[in-house]
Image (cartoon, rainbow, N blue to C red; front, side):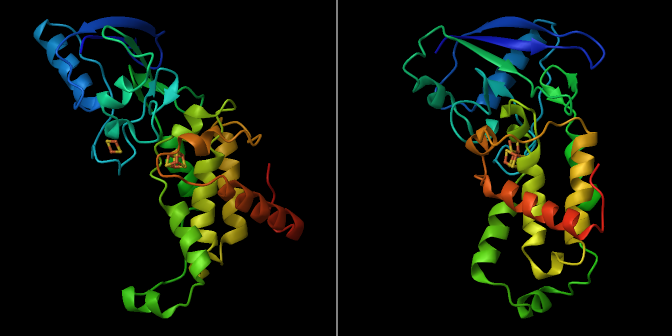
Length: 257
Ligand code: SF4
Ligand code: FES
């Protein structure tokens, strides 16, 4: 395949970015999207030009490092992480032809400043977790955990929420740049388990305050976040978060700014 890549280039968070176009030949349909970027970087390096900065680590859909916006969609046209996207997935689109241009941008959100090219600073998500994503009870070793009964439906819902890998695609896809799906996932996966009860109400308020402080927007139930989430975290976690917030405010034990 011959393709053109239109890529966002930006030196650092204090400079203005712009798109640059690169023509590539010899791209094969079994290549992963990140392998195409690797190939481009080899070519740029050999030509004495600056390689394109992008994040990746596991390349197996586990770590959540690799997100970019591809042709306007967070992680591209299929529901996966960018590292699990292959050129054949793009080629399946009827509008894709030999020589097509693929546009690649970083996540766009006040909460995710661009550090360089396609790399954004996602430490805001870590700070949300630090604000409340922990438990204080001693859970003991694995046999002790097995001894604590958890209803099957709650265990499954907690597991579904815990699948979140913190990639940030939900923020990138949301027109409000809200991180509520991420925050809801973290609130739900602890709040559904017996071990997560002592901090339950403080957790939701502290995490939401941090969410707002980081510059993420509010949720208006559009659902783009859940539609792009590579781990299928359901929208329902936001409803759980709102229920916990309502309870916390009603009890008046904590204040949400
Ligand atoms: S909720 Fe889904 S899209 Fe959002 S950070 Fe977690 S895994 Fe990524
Ligand atoms: S590189 Fe780890 S999820 Fe993509």
